[in-house]
Length: 291
Image 1 (cartoon, rainbow, N blue to C red):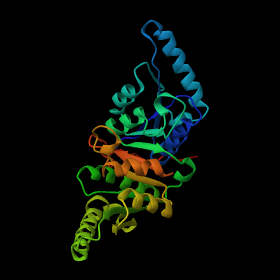
Image 2: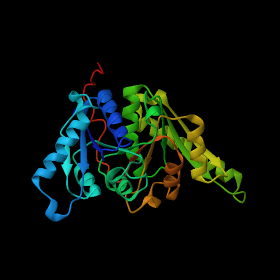
Image 3: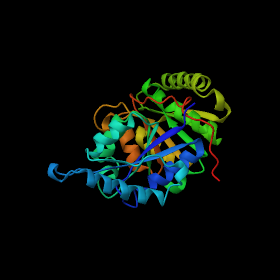
Image 4: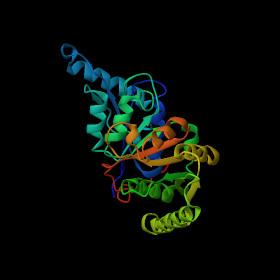
């Protein structure tokens, strides 16, 4: 089994450095390396090997003071557009970790153009760090689903994390309804989804089945209101969601619901999409001591 490789965009701002600290914690947890990337665009006549070398030296100096060298991989500097550099490089990594907002460039405000495109196009899952203090120790994971094939892309990551940390997993599906819909039909629909959840647990979470609960809930609230409130009330360390990998966050799993949820929660989010390629059962090698 291979070790986890984690790509971490930074723009040297303090808030973007949260992602480095979180990435290092993941590397310690599962065994792996952190690969920082700084991307800057310069006009053609300003580009030179010297400017790239200087940026690389600055990046290594910054990172080495914050990340244990035994968990640090190569420092990457690119003069491509940030989104192009991150998306292209992400094909070679198992996880991308980004802060939810920052000063400029690759760690703009969550749902800014760069972060949005990375979420949509990244090959591995993207961890958006919104509340660093609440992430570790990982004890409670929420997995939202709409029962689509694409939503299953988030299951492997969640199952592996639960296996490594002993965290509990809660599977959630919100069923919105109106008073005009027959109650018996709705109740029957919920029962079919509960049956599907039980099948999912056996199929996707066999090693942590005793840690998994599920909920298919009828609600008159909009889906994003129900999910946002649920997250607030239960204080999860991590929420996992899936995107469709098309254009814009209105195409996230459950449509605009997911984009709205992400804007309104203060919880760390793992996002997968249709091109997510890592098989998390093959990623983790022997865990590394935090000593």
